[in-house]
Length: 499
Image (cartoon, rainbow, N blue to C red; front, top):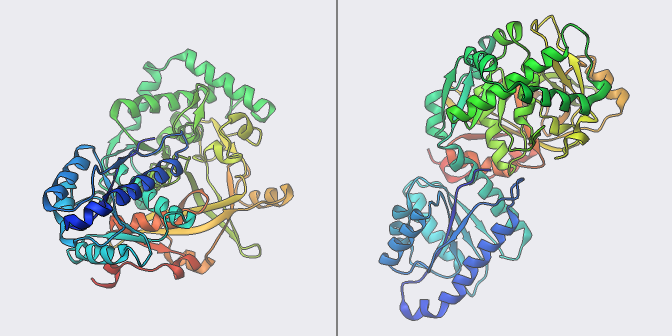
């Protein structure tokens, strides 16, 4: 998975008789933090962000400039400024200005009286904030796992922001069916996140499907599905046949080719109505792109949003990076059941099969999956609809939106619920039993959700990622709208107090 290098440097005292005595201690702290980060922040693929440790502590103007240049030349896009002793605060400017001003900054300090790192942090970080630099502060013992987790949450957010900044979203066909919340809103997105988009007509995909796809590869994909699904591949001789499923496989392979050719880092597929009425339903290709595997083995998930919902895709890409490379989940906000206080979030397409059992072994996930014939009422061209119930467990749900052209992100902690088969079936019958479902409970009331949520598509990932998303929003100038008790507990940063 793509990452950006992290620079880590120690602010120090200008007085030679002081830094000569503390240099070894301070460099030991820097290297210890680097080791904690390298060992504790592994991605799904086994990689970790590169951590570049400054060669010496910052104790003069010339050293500050040299260390800044050293980290800049190493490609650092994120900086952690450590405080272990008192330091001379003005030295932060020759360091920070040399390294580059538009990067996330974490000020990280010990908390003990003998070595006043706290004093140095507040004096130095306060100077940065006076000039409008958005920083975050973490203070605590270097051996405290809770402090480690807070640092990891911050780094995940910084990695997500600095990685997406130069990425391109491939929009196949434009926003679907006139859903204006699905636009790629160019100016606010580039200002906050830096990424841009390129639109490709779906005709391009159709022509690649006709002329550039290896039919032997299509057959391998078909055999893979038939072996995994067995009698849960519900051929009906009309909407779902070997031929219509092969068409969906061709579309997947075409999107892979064009994504690579155009340099797309994530994408969205319009589908309705051109493809769904004249080519095939996009559910299977969207699933495969979002999955961490196909018939050729393991691969990195390629975020793909159904209906080319651009802000869904951007949110999914951020969730992918914050989770260390897991698939992100795309759902329709379909049905609320007040008597059970749960949501049935389902849609045709886009649920990565990984969510069925959350296994890197596709066989384990596909044991819980059925391919149904596409609904002719909506999807005349046919193909398979993918059906399963998401594995129970803790989740975080989010969605990027706009209010009066200003970006915000709705963020909710929640879970995918464990229901009996009978309960799940009864709920699914109220929406569509041939589609994938998440039976979700969120830490927010129906009324709060309804009052602030920006659109009809909600995105998700596993576990509790709320703090990372908050850090990300604060770095990017996006307002985090945190629902439920987590929102009540959030401490707004100073730039939200003083406008």
